[in-house]
Length: 252
Image (tube, rainbow, N blue to C red; front, side, top):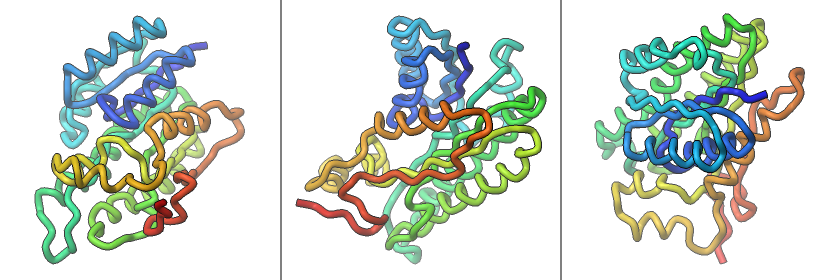
């Protein structure tokens, strides 16, 4: 039976790979993001290659009014969301806290924490009404260990860790699964965004070892949704073999 999967931040990186993975396995998708052209391109790909039904929602998760409007605009057919993947997130800048750029801080906190909360607030009631569903929050190893010049990004992902745990407690009585997936070093747009378009600096992050790919993370996200109804993976940290911790990566 086809499920309805809602993926935020689906225009690139993890989100795009996650949407493709679920479509490959016979599901229908609601994909959201800020870049309409990319959403339209992905919709076409999923429909043509996998015969999935796809609904696009173009909005910014940082705007609670837009989130509420998008979810409230769903027809009854699309309201039956089986899996919400709160993937939208980013790191911006890498400064010590006393030199931090306030706009960078606002973007990370508003996207990584508040955007995730807004989506959960308006999608979770649909799951509660049906007494079923699965919420998957994309966290980070940065939500497990703090590293230099990453205090605000790490703080936002520690927040995701705490929000995930609290959400699981709140929703367990409604038979809703809540999972955090926390990747380590992964080669996507992440470092390009963090370093504000500085491609050479972004590329240097991944030299000397094989990082995770977006597809690696998508495989794990899909896997946790395939378990029996009575089994839930609460928290899953995945890293490339060359990475032992947030701070230590073995480079050849």
